[in-house]
Length: 127
Image 1 (spheres, rainbow, N blue to C red):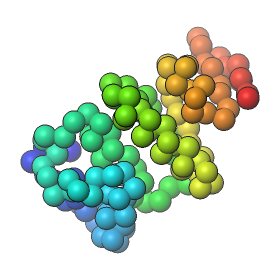
Image 2: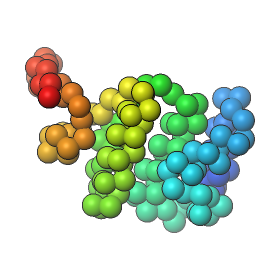
Image 3: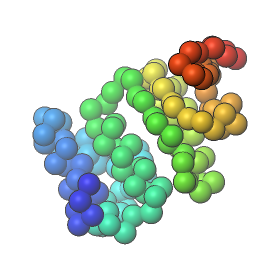
Image 4: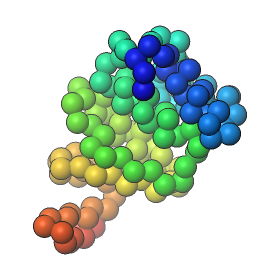
């Protein structure tokens, strides 16, 4: 994303390209908690705010399956808790949420089912 663009304009351009109504942009900005900074340039966004903007972009099309790759890397404790709760909320809505992470302690707090992959093979660990 170009740092000179606002979060809202970035999401609007993505929505237009995908044929998604503009009102969906405001909805996802609310979901990720960026509505108060939607008109600010993203250049000054923190890592957590950038993560939220990326998640907002992923949610634009209202997908039923989501894939998060290392979603909490570099985030502060508040940001980690927010991402964890969002993923749980999305799963509770009936969506499938896949998470790729090397932080097993975080996955133990977040996931319903774990599959550990090492050296190209997996061993399911279900709880």
